[in-house]
Amino acid sequence: MSRGCATREWSGGYILLLVMVFLLLLAVIAGTSLRGSALEFRLAGNDQFREQALQRALGIARALALRPAHFPPDLPVGDSLCGQDSACARPILPAPVAGHGLPEGSGLEYRITRRGPLFAPAPDLRLSQARASGAGAWWAANFELQVVIDGTAAGFGSAEVVQGVTLLLPVEVP
Image (tube, rainbow, N blue to C red; front, side, top):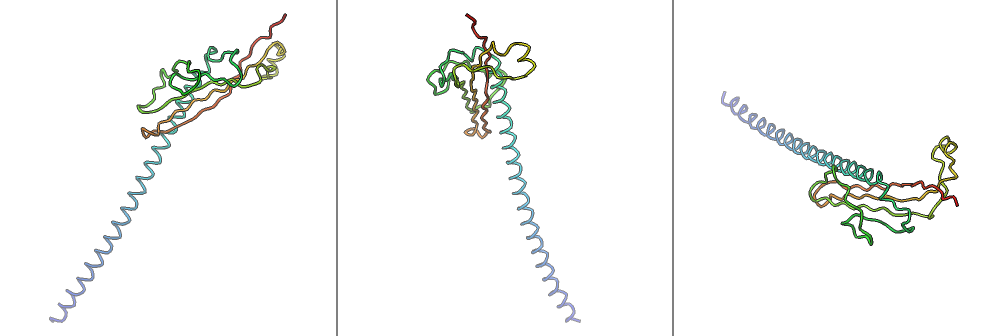
């Protein structure tokens, strides 16, 4: 009889060891899953910050593009008008960030550059409008609008938007 009891005690030790190995495997699997979930959470946050920065940059570009005074036709080809905080030769544009709330620590730079030729024939933006308004009576002045939001120092996303803007000007008839 004592032989049977010793066998049970001995087999009980194997079961305890087997349970401990399974618990260790479960702990490793749980740790790996937790690390993967944390990485996915950070990736989703990065995408969210980048999308927010892009939407802010698009909003600021739209706010700038809606003001014809920001696009002077007498600006020489290749010259730029920049925001007041930009490292530009002519930083004279006012800040268009009202309602676009940049996060603390984010940087904003924007510039409007005159592109050549100085005056070009007006493009046919819509053929029916060109026929109705006499497109030959218009000149086009081309500009490039660039907005950069950089929030990397504060842990936010960054975005850059570049848009073309064409200003239609009536041809002076002598």
